[in-house]
Image (cartoon, rainbow, N blue to C red; front, side, top):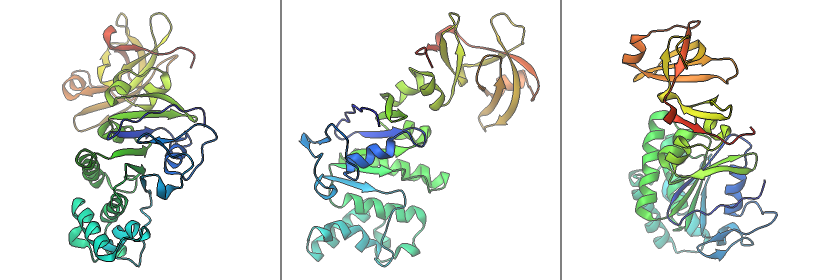
Length: 310
């Protein structure tokens, strides 16, 4: 890990985003107390918790595997954290039932994990993490095991809970779609350091480096008029004849129907793989197939300058 300077506003939803091995899970584990930083401090609610064990930090962690106890009911799983703190049985079960109701799982309180679907198990794990009323909830790729439909529903639930409870959420993901949908603050990481951080729309529409532009997807990185790299959103890229003045000559490599339009994959000399997202009317007006030569154009205002040197 390189030196990290990360400040997460209280009550916000922060997504640590990046490819495998970039350091996002290590960062989460340092916040939780499962990894010790080589230097520097971890501060939560104004208190330095760097040397405190996980149970005394005021954080709760929800693991990717959910880690439910197979022999305990959903209710007893949700109450487990309070049991470890010595809370009486009646009080901890009442609090656990309240948390299960919060995640719409109170009707399944008596079921064992094996009797629950993956999405239901995830909700029980979420209730268990919330039952201790943490200042920060730490989530390690919590949606990766869910199917796309359920992922969207649970995503909405996480955002609702963050808003309603006022708890800081720190969520590790490799999915830029997930980060854009959930986060108030996106922290894009690369090789153990922060590449760029900010509001989702800032990272998507104003990437500062070629890595950020490529990882956030939806961008083409090309050479500008001065030779410096620029990023152009794929949905702001249009087709033209290959010899059109100012057009970038390219060859169509693939065409995919997206439901709302067409996604074209193209190659051009001196550029990485390029993409163009066309609405149905634009595509039908100039239908192309793999192997066709085309030109790519975009408005000058849609070209975002990038840092040189990558």
